[in-house]
Amino acid sequence: MVGFKPSDLPPTPGVKFLSAGTAACIADLFTFPLDTAKVRLQIQGESAVSGAAKGIRYKGVFGTISTIVKTEGPRSLYNGLVAGLQRQMSFASIRIGLYDTVKLFYTNGKDKAGIGSRILAGCTTGAMAVTIAQPTDVVKVRFQAQINLHGVKRRYNGTLDAYKTIAKEEGMRGLWKGTLPNVTRNAIVNCTELVTYDLIKEALLQHRLLTDNLPCHFFSAFGAGFCTTVIASPVDVVKTRYMNSPPGQYKSAINCAWTMATKEGPTAFYKGFVPSFLRLGSWNVVMFVSYEQLKRAMMMSKQNFAPTG
Image (cartoon, rainbow, N blue to C red; front, side):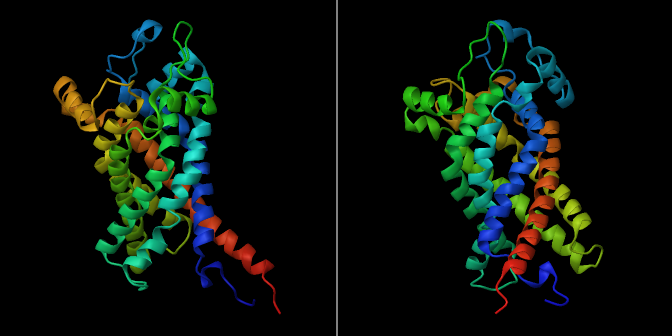
Protein backbone atom coordinates (compact mmCIF):
# COMPACT_ATOMS: atom_id res chain seq x y z
CA MET A 1 0.00 0.00 0.00
CA VAL A 2 1.52 3.35 -1.06
CA GLY A 3 2.23 5.65 1.86
CA PHE A 4 1.18 3.03 4.40
CA LYS A 5 2.36 3.57 7.96
CA PRO A 6 2.01 1.11 10.89
CA SER A 7 -0.08 3.67 12.74
CA ASP A 8 -2.66 3.70 9.93
CA LEU A 9 -4.19 0.49 11.25
CA PRO A 10 -5.06 0.02 14.93
CA PRO A 11 -3.49 -3.11 16.50
CA THR A 12 -5.95 -5.94 17.07
CA PRO A 13 -6.52 -7.32 20.61
CA GLY A 14 -4.58 -10.46 19.62
CA VAL A 15 -1.58 -8.41 18.51
CA LYS A 16 -1.66 -6.40 21.75
CA PHE A 17 -2.01 -9.57 23.84
CA LEU A 18 0.99 -11.31 22.25
CA SER A 19 3.08 -8.12 22.07
CA ALA A 20 2.52 -7.37 25.77
CA GLY A 21 3.54 -10.85 26.94
CA THR A 22 6.64 -10.93 24.73
CA ALA A 23 7.69 -7.38 25.67
CA ALA A 24 7.27 -8.18 29.38
CA CYS A 25 9.51 -11.26 29.02
CA ILE A 26 12.17 -9.13 27.30
CA ALA A 27 11.94 -6.59 30.13
CA ASP A 28 12.27 -9.36 32.75
CA LEU A 29 15.42 -10.73 31.10
CA PHE A 30 17.06 -7.32 31.43
CA THR A 31 15.85 -6.36 34.91
CA PHE A 32 15.52 -9.65 36.82
CA PRO A 33 18.66 -9.11 39.01
CA LEU A 34 17.16 -5.84 40.25
CA ASP A 35 13.93 -7.66 41.10
CA THR A 36 15.87 -10.34 43.01
CA ALA A 37 17.72 -7.62 44.95
CA LYS A 38 14.38 -5.96 45.75
CA VAL A 39 12.93 -9.22 47.11
CA ARG A 40 16.01 -9.88 49.29
CA LEU A 41 15.86 -6.38 50.75
CA GLN A 42 12.12 -6.63 51.36
CA ILE A 43 12.37 -9.88 53.32
CA GLN A 44 15.45 -8.79 55.29
CA GLY A 45 14.61 -8.60 58.97
CA GLU A 46 12.35 -11.64 59.05
CA SER A 47 13.01 -14.08 61.89
CA ALA A 48 12.82 -17.13 59.61
CA VAL A 49 16.49 -16.81 58.52
CA SER A 50 18.81 -19.39 60.02
CA GLY A 51 22.19 -21.11 59.75
CA ALA A 52 24.83 -19.78 57.37
CA ALA A 53 22.43 -17.16 56.02
CA LYS A 54 22.17 -15.37 59.40
CA GLY A 55 25.39 -13.44 58.92
CA ILE A 56 24.41 -12.07 55.52
CA ARG A 57 23.22 -8.46 55.46
CA TYR A 58 22.11 -6.60 52.38
CA LYS A 59 22.68 -2.88 51.96
CA GLY A 60 21.45 -0.96 48.96
CA VAL A 61 20.56 -2.33 45.56
CA PHE A 62 24.05 -2.64 44.13
CA GLY A 63 25.43 -3.80 47.49
CA THR A 64 22.76 -6.52 47.54
CA ILE A 65 23.61 -7.62 44.00
CA SER A 66 27.33 -7.64 44.89
CA THR A 67 26.69 -9.68 48.07
CA ILE A 68 24.57 -12.22 46.18
CA VAL A 69 27.27 -12.63 43.51
CA LYS A 70 30.06 -13.00 46.12
CA THR A 71 28.23 -15.43 48.41
CA GLU A 72 26.07 -17.41 45.99
CA GLY A 73 27.41 -16.79 42.50
CA PRO A 74 25.96 -14.71 39.63
CA ARG A 75 23.41 -17.38 38.64
CA SER A 76 21.52 -16.71 41.88
CA LEU A 77 20.52 -13.29 40.53
CA TYR A 78 18.29 -15.18 38.10
CA ASN A 79 16.71 -17.54 40.64
CA GLY A 80 13.06 -17.95 39.64
CA LEU A 81 13.53 -16.65 36.08
CA VAL A 82 11.58 -19.56 34.55
CA ALA A 83 8.59 -18.85 36.82
CA GLY A 84 9.08 -15.13 36.11
CA LEU A 85 8.78 -15.65 32.35
CA GLN A 86 5.77 -17.92 32.85
CA ARG A 87 4.26 -15.18 34.97
CA GLN A 88 4.80 -12.47 32.38
CA MET A 89 3.33 -14.48 29.50
CA SER A 90 0.15 -15.14 31.49
CA PHE A 91 0.12 -11.90 33.51
CA ALA A 92 1.32 -9.03 31.30
CA SER A 93 -0.57 -10.38 28.29
CA ILE A 94 -3.82 -9.89 30.18
CA ARG A 95 -3.20 -6.75 32.23
CA ILE A 96 -1.48 -4.77 29.46
CA GLY A 97 -2.65 -6.51 26.29
CA LEU A 98 -6.34 -6.31 27.15
CA TYR A 99 -6.23 -2.83 28.76
CA ASP A 100 -7.33 -0.91 25.65
CA THR A 101 -10.09 -3.43 24.89
CA VAL A 102 -11.50 -3.20 28.43
CA LYS A 103 -11.14 0.59 28.36
CA LEU A 104 -13.31 0.68 25.21
CA PHE A 105 -15.85 -1.53 27.00
CA TYR A 106 -16.15 0.98 29.85
CA THR A 107 -16.48 3.91 27.41
CA ASN A 108 -19.07 2.09 25.27
CA GLY A 109 -16.75 2.09 22.29
CA LYS A 110 -15.73 5.77 22.48
CA ASP A 111 -12.07 6.50 21.73
CA LYS A 112 -11.89 9.34 24.25
CA ALA A 113 -11.62 7.83 27.73
CA GLY A 114 -11.84 9.72 31.00
CA ILE A 115 -9.74 9.07 34.11
CA GLY A 116 -12.51 6.96 35.65
CA SER A 117 -12.71 4.62 32.65
CA ARG A 118 -8.93 4.24 32.56
CA ILE A 119 -8.77 3.45 36.28
CA LEU A 120 -11.60 0.92 35.99
CA ALA A 121 -9.89 -0.74 33.03
CA GLY A 122 -6.58 -0.92 34.92
CA CYS A 123 -8.25 -2.43 38.01
CA THR A 124 -10.18 -4.96 35.92
CA THR A 125 -7.26 -6.28 33.84
CA GLY A 126 -4.92 -6.22 36.85
CA ALA A 127 -7.31 -8.31 38.96
CA MET A 128 -8.00 -10.74 36.10
CA ALA A 129 -4.29 -11.21 35.48
CA VAL A 130 -3.43 -11.87 39.14
CA THR A 131 -6.22 -14.43 39.53
CA ILE A 132 -4.78 -16.47 36.68
CA ALA A 133 -1.04 -15.92 37.19
CA GLN A 134 -0.80 -16.02 41.02
CA PRO A 135 0.88 -19.48 41.29
CA THR A 136 3.71 -18.35 39.01
CA ASP A 137 4.24 -15.26 41.19
CA VAL A 138 4.38 -17.33 44.40
CA VAL A 139 7.02 -19.66 42.92
CA LYS A 140 9.04 -16.75 41.48
CA VAL A 141 9.18 -14.91 44.83
CA ARG A 142 10.14 -18.04 46.76
CA PHE A 143 12.97 -18.84 44.36
CA GLN A 144 14.26 -15.27 44.54
CA ALA A 145 14.20 -15.42 48.33
CA GLN A 146 15.97 -18.82 48.37
CA ILE A 147 19.61 -18.44 49.45
CA ASN A 148 22.00 -20.80 47.66
CA LEU A 149 24.64 -21.55 50.28
CA HIS A 150 26.25 -24.68 51.68
CA GLY A 151 24.52 -25.48 54.95
CA VAL A 152 21.28 -23.80 53.90
CA LYS A 153 18.59 -26.24 52.85
CA ARG A 154 17.02 -25.50 49.48
CA ARG A 155 13.24 -25.25 49.59
CA TYR A 156 12.80 -26.40 46.00
CA ASN A 157 14.97 -28.13 43.39
CA GLY A 158 13.28 -26.69 40.32
CA THR A 159 10.23 -24.83 39.04
CA LEU A 160 8.05 -27.92 38.57
CA ASP A 161 9.20 -29.26 41.93
CA ALA A 162 8.13 -25.98 43.53
CA TYR A 163 4.62 -26.17 42.08
CA LYS A 164 4.27 -29.82 43.16
CA THR A 165 5.76 -29.29 46.65
CA ILE A 166 3.62 -26.26 47.42
CA ALA A 167 0.46 -28.02 46.25
CA LYS A 168 1.36 -31.13 48.27
CA GLU A 169 2.43 -29.40 51.51
CA GLU A 170 0.13 -26.37 51.54
CA GLY A 171 -2.70 -27.46 49.25
CA MET A 172 -3.96 -25.56 46.24
CA ARG A 173 -4.48 -22.56 48.51
CA GLY A 174 -0.71 -22.40 48.89
CA LEU A 175 -0.30 -21.70 45.18
CA TRP A 176 -2.73 -18.80 45.50
CA LYS A 177 -1.20 -17.56 48.75
CA GLY A 178 -1.18 -13.79 48.96
CA THR A 179 -3.79 -13.37 46.23
CA LEU A 180 -5.59 -10.58 48.12
CA PRO A 181 -2.49 -8.38 48.66
CA ASN A 182 -1.35 -9.23 45.15
CA VAL A 183 -4.72 -8.23 43.66
CA THR A 184 -4.55 -5.01 45.69
CA ARG A 185 -0.96 -4.39 44.65
CA ASN A 186 -1.54 -5.10 40.99
CA ALA A 187 -4.75 -3.10 40.82
CA ILE A 188 -2.72 -0.16 42.15
CA VAL A 189 0.28 -0.92 39.93
CA ASN A 190 -1.79 -1.50 36.81
CA CYS A 191 -3.87 1.64 37.29
CA THR A 192 -0.90 3.86 38.09
CA GLU A 193 1.39 2.35 35.45
CA LEU A 194 -1.01 2.24 32.51
CA VAL A 195 -3.00 5.37 33.33
CA THR A 196 0.10 7.53 33.92
CA TYR A 197 1.75 6.12 30.80
CA ASP A 198 -1.44 6.90 28.86
CA LEU A 199 -1.69 10.43 30.25
CA ILE A 200 1.99 11.35 29.91
CA LYS A 201 2.12 10.03 26.35
CA GLU A 202 -1.13 11.82 25.49
CA ALA A 203 0.16 15.12 26.92
CA LEU A 204 3.47 14.87 25.05
CA LEU A 205 1.64 14.23 21.78
CA GLN A 206 -1.09 16.85 22.29
CA HIS A 207 1.44 19.60 23.09
CA ARG A 208 3.62 18.39 20.21
CA LEU A 209 6.64 18.05 22.49
CA LEU A 210 7.41 14.67 20.94
CA THR A 211 6.06 12.47 18.17
CA ASP A 212 4.67 8.97 18.74
CA ASN A 213 8.06 7.31 18.66
CA LEU A 214 10.83 5.90 20.87
CA PRO A 215 11.72 9.09 22.87
CA CYS A 216 8.03 9.63 23.67
CA HIS A 217 7.61 6.02 24.78
CA PHE A 218 10.82 6.25 26.87
CA PHE A 219 9.79 9.37 28.84
CA SER A 220 6.21 8.14 29.31
CA ALA A 221 7.41 4.78 30.62
CA PHE A 222 10.00 6.33 32.97
CA GLY A 223 7.42 8.68 34.49
CA ALA A 224 4.96 5.83 34.88
CA GLY A 225 7.61 3.72 36.62
CA PHE A 226 8.39 6.42 39.21
CA CYS A 227 4.74 7.17 40.02
CA THR A 228 3.96 3.46 40.32
CA THR A 229 6.89 2.77 42.69
CA VAL A 230 5.90 5.57 45.07
CA ILE A 231 2.28 4.43 45.31
CA ALA A 232 2.72 0.64 45.21
CA SER A 233 5.81 0.01 47.37
CA PRO A 234 4.03 -0.59 50.73
CA VAL A 235 1.64 -3.16 49.26
CA ASP A 236 4.50 -4.75 47.29
CA VAL A 237 6.58 -5.29 50.43
CA VAL A 238 3.65 -6.89 52.30
CA LYS A 239 2.90 -9.10 49.27
CA THR A 240 6.51 -10.30 49.06
CA ARG A 241 6.80 -10.98 52.80
CA TYR A 242 3.50 -12.84 52.98
CA MET A 243 4.02 -14.93 49.84
CA ASN A 244 7.51 -15.96 50.96
CA SER A 245 6.52 -16.80 54.55
CA PRO A 246 6.28 -20.42 55.75
CA PRO A 247 2.85 -21.68 56.89
CA GLY A 248 1.81 -20.18 60.23
CA GLN A 249 4.21 -17.22 60.32
CA TYR A 250 1.43 -14.76 59.53
CA LYS A 251 -2.30 -15.27 59.96
CA SER A 252 -3.12 -13.08 56.97
CA ALA A 253 -1.73 -10.32 54.78
CA ILE A 254 -3.18 -7.75 57.19
CA ASN A 255 -1.46 -9.51 60.09
CA CYS A 256 1.78 -9.42 58.10
CA ALA A 257 1.41 -5.67 57.58
CA TRP A 258 0.59 -5.13 61.28
CA THR A 259 3.59 -7.19 62.38
CA MET A 260 5.88 -5.18 60.11
CA ALA A 261 4.48 -1.87 61.39
CA THR A 262 4.79 -2.79 65.09
CA LYS A 263 8.16 -4.57 64.96
CA GLU A 264 10.02 -2.67 62.26
CA GLY A 265 8.21 0.64 61.98
CA PRO A 266 6.65 2.42 58.99
CA THR A 267 9.94 2.55 57.07
CA ALA A 268 9.69 -1.25 56.64
CA PHE A 269 6.98 -0.63 54.02
CA TYR A 270 9.55 1.11 51.84
CA LYS A 271 12.29 -1.46 52.19
CA GLY A 272 13.87 -2.01 48.80
CA PHE A 273 12.44 1.25 47.41
CA VAL A 274 15.53 2.11 45.35
CA PRO A 275 15.77 -1.32 43.69
CA SER A 276 11.99 -1.23 43.26
CA PHE A 277 12.26 2.05 41.38
CA LEU A 278 15.35 1.01 39.42
CA ARG A 279 13.66 -2.25 38.53
CA LEU A 280 10.20 -0.85 37.81
CA GLY A 281 11.52 2.23 36.02
CA SER A 282 13.88 0.26 33.80
CA TRP A 283 11.29 -2.54 33.38
CA ASN A 284 8.70 -0.01 32.24
CA VAL A 285 11.09 1.57 29.76
CA VAL A 286 12.15 -1.76 28.22
CA MET A 287 8.62 -3.19 28.28
CA PHE A 288 6.72 -0.22 26.83
CA VAL A 289 9.36 0.54 24.18
CA SER A 290 9.42 -3.15 23.18
CA TYR A 291 5.61 -3.32 23.32
CA GLU A 292 5.14 -0.33 21.02
CA GLN A 293 7.74 -1.60 18.55
CA LEU A 294 6.39 -5.17 18.57
CA LYS A 295 2.86 -3.93 17.93
CA ARG A 296 4.06 -1.96 14.93
CA ALA A 297 6.19 -4.82 13.63
CA MET A 298 3.31 -7.29 13.93
CA MET A 299 0.89 -4.95 12.19
CA MET A 300 3.42 -4.35 9.39
CA SER A 301 3.93 -8.10 9.05
CA LYS A 302 0.18 -8.68 9.01
CA GLN A 303 -0.23 -6.01 6.32
CA ASN A 304 2.62 -7.44 4.19
CA PHE A 305 1.22 -10.97 4.28
CA ALA A 306 -2.41 -9.99 3.87
CA PRO A 307 -4.00 -11.15 0.56
CA THR A 308 -4.29 -8.30 -1.92
CA GLY A 309 -7.12 -9.80 -4.00
